[in-house]
Image (cartoon, rainbow, N blue to C red; front, side, top):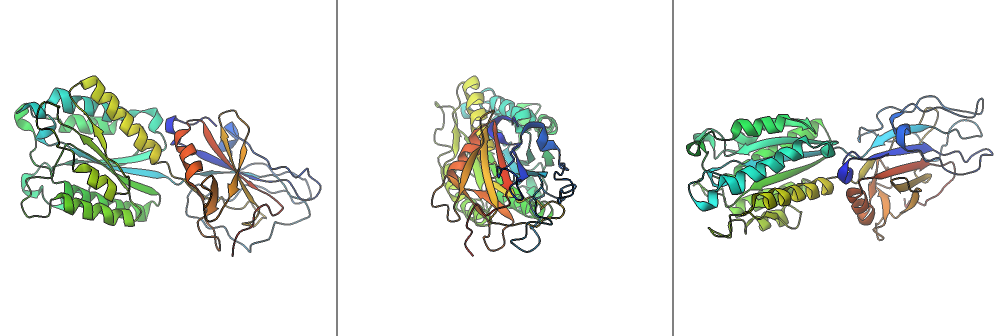
Length: 397
């Protein structure tokens, strides 16, 4: 299966192997159009062939049922194809629309050098077919009402709700918030409050739609104009650390001032990225609009790739079968190449491997570091899961 750039719309196939009762013992791996057929076709005639596959294979929440060790009725195995997907990915984007991004009241607030190229690259990301498979929301800060600017509740409902990408809704919202004149810009940078409100929004969304969530903060500098002491870098760090502990990473894109005026405006943003579990902020230099747009797109592409989930829901067993955790093989294919088996390692001591989320009662497959990195960076990656009729791995109890 050919995938969009950065592998966001990554899918895997689950093939129930044909190894019992006289078949040749090789696992079936299918790609391309086969991924779209979730019903499959049983083989084996009267020897126990199966009908349509179990439902909910791509939900990411189903748990394999039935006693471990059962392989189904009859003496022969039939081949059955089910469709499953990586855990869905949701990006909650908080976007700085304060006057320092383009009010033109000083050289460091140049609209031509900061706002215009950043907005162009941001719109492209949201509308790019390569973003297919992602779902995103967009929250502008500061809020339109000055008196409510320093309240997390102001940002608990985004300006664009979670929407599958690509979508033109984001570009339209950015156009609507772009000031008509230099005097119409919103003032203030309530970073701690937009972070807190967005994390609250993510919490509610995740309860309704489980998946992998991340916060993306786009800003050009220090929190300011909220005078109650709660809007500081330390306050932001505290909030993103809490989110990281709740498995919500924070990515930071910092838009630097032009080099000749007020340098160092984004130095503190690195602390937020580290606290958010993403190691380094993406610092975008300004001064050359074309170079700024290019660098911003590159940062977005890296975030897009890093956001790919490396967790796969185990597909439901086909009708007449029950799941056996020791009869699973994971394969990786790049483009038209041959599938290669990925080793099983429950401890991920070798990062070129995969493991179960819970070996005692597995519901998901997790890719270890090297395989995860390969999937995130390969635009033609596909994964396969072969369910065999014989034990092929040893899972610790």
